[in-house]
Length: 128
Image (cartoon, rainbow, N blue to C red):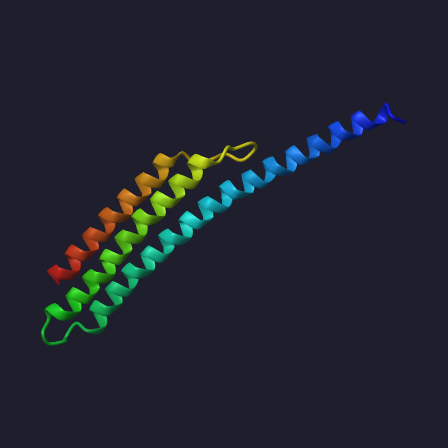
């Protein structure tokens, strides 16, 4: 019976390490889902900006709805870059085991693209 004990301990250690690896993989995937959620929140801010501009198109003075829409676009840009920073920091602390981790440059590329789209939306709103 004592001979079986080291084998049991090894098995328990292997299972514990596997569960830890799986948990880290789940955390990686959760981090990526959280990044996507923050990007959706930023896009919602842009949608609010467009909606405000559309609803208050005939407002007087005309610059007021444009200014409020611009504030929402600014908030969206802040959200994009905050999401990038937090997702990159979390990815840097984690080690993938079986999950395929997105490189942190993907977060940066997405933040750049969403920022450019936000700025273009703001320009269109002021041009109208």
